Image 1 (cartoon, rainbow, N blue to C red):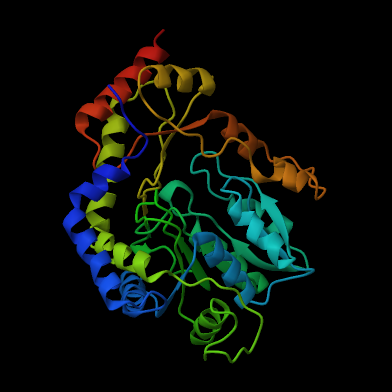
Image 2: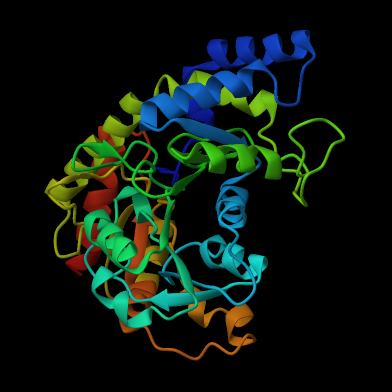
Length: 364
């Protein structure tokens, strides 16, 4: 039996008529940059998340980068974040000229350990970027309290967490700015790169729209140095179709996770805090001898992935910048985590097969 990590073809076929019609509409209209589809999608996502403003951009990476730029974070500044995340979380900080300051993670949620944040704050600290890793919200109450105490900005990296909730409220609505990614494999994925920035601050929203379009709110009139990072009209049209299915798809992922939890034995399954809604962008277990298990699963036709095999502070790019810190929980997790197949179209038969195969290996 073959079980892919994710099946984007199956998802497309389930909504093919809607997708094809949406694409055709854009092609016929002939408006491909910042058209009506982008505007409507921004309005729909803002309403869904519970914020006033949503600004469509080229990618989740750009969403984080422009969030930092809109807050005037740059040379000499420091931004506290997690090292156990996709590289872009720290990369964007470095691209502004600021310095990422890494904090270790909680071993159960894999999110930033808020208890260690205060020790990292200096006179140069300007912001905190918590990552809602794998689709589970970070400890937002505690993080926001620290930010308020030290007058710091909070940028929520919600690239993996659209639809996740913290105490009944959607993530991306807590901090000063939230960032979403619509990379194809995300719970809400485009057919290419796409992202979004969200905020309740009118001035920040205005500046973000300016920054994404070469620093120009009015064509050919540039008030500052910006970038070219506009959400593509075709991608917005595709995302609007898929957005209607997001809640159902997220619930299917949660159902799959519950089934995995009931079947898997002798491995560490994902921990979900009682006051959050985890949307399982990744269903990630933890196991010793991870590579041996991964190889065994591959031989049995089961695809898996490692998110992430090397914490950012140990990446060559940051070693070259002089980073030589130790973050034991992040380093330990990087050696043990393994993401299993989990997507809305996945059958119960496939979940049973994956769990049976893992349990069989564990009992050898």
